[in-house]
Amino acid sequence: MLAENIKPDCITFVGVLTACRHTGLVEEGMRYWESMAKDYKIEPNADHYACFVDMLGRAGKLNEAHKLVKSMPMGPQPRALGALLAACRTYGNVEIAEEIAEQLFELEPENTGNYILLSSIYASKEKWNEARKVREAMRKRIINKHPGCSWVETKSRGHEIELKN
Image (cartoon, rainbow, N blue to C red; front, side, top):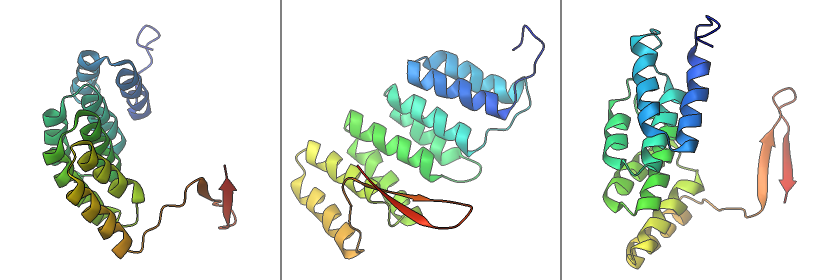
């Protein structure tokens, strides 16, 4: 793009950060992150933060990702928090996972994935009592995971369609 004198926009940077996170190019992703605001005057939005947090998390840089989530000008967003919680499961970080899960439980109280992730993190550390408590909290909120079932809402008609795997 630069060779063709095409100025990158915010969508370009979502694509570039996504590519960096999936290929493990953390240092390059960090350079693009800094360049976005400094060179192109593009303020990162929630999607940029989610990509960057996920990139750091996949690389095991949980403390850096945690700091970034705390510094988000729009406040912590579910996608960034979810990416960090998933990284906590990968790397077995219970301390950060507990804090992030509490925020997710407030922002998305009916998202079963957040409860299941935290429960899995506890189970991987053989903290069976904590894992049980998370599952009980999920049940108390009358949240049930429906295996093999997805919901799609069509915008044009507002109908819900059940897709079974």
